[in-house]
Image 1 (cartoon, rainbow, N blue to C red):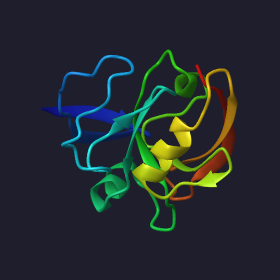
Image 2 (image 1 turned 180 degrees about the horizontal axis):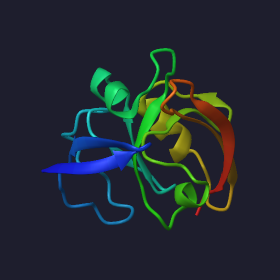
Image 3 (image 1 turned 90 degrees about the vertical axis):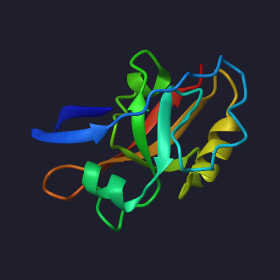
Length: 139
């Protein structure tokens, strides 16, 4: 399904795919290709590995690496930390993150109630991302 959005004051068209979300705690399908589809986690956000298409869509500079946030649940730890779609995460709890597997392993190791520091870069229109650490409490 094609959806028109406004991001950083610019009109964009994105393609959305609907799917049934697994119940809380239910493992995702084993047939999925790692990193190819978004992965939602206990922090309330979905991430994907950065592809050339996602770099173009979210205006991510070539020198910025990590995983890109593709959606954020409003009422979640990620939502409360002002993490947004298009943000790039390159570190979780002091561990560098360059792909989806590293991100999932770092998040899966977090315990409920723990505070975690995540390094987030938010690309903007002038090409220079704003980067900062965000502290989230794991639900």
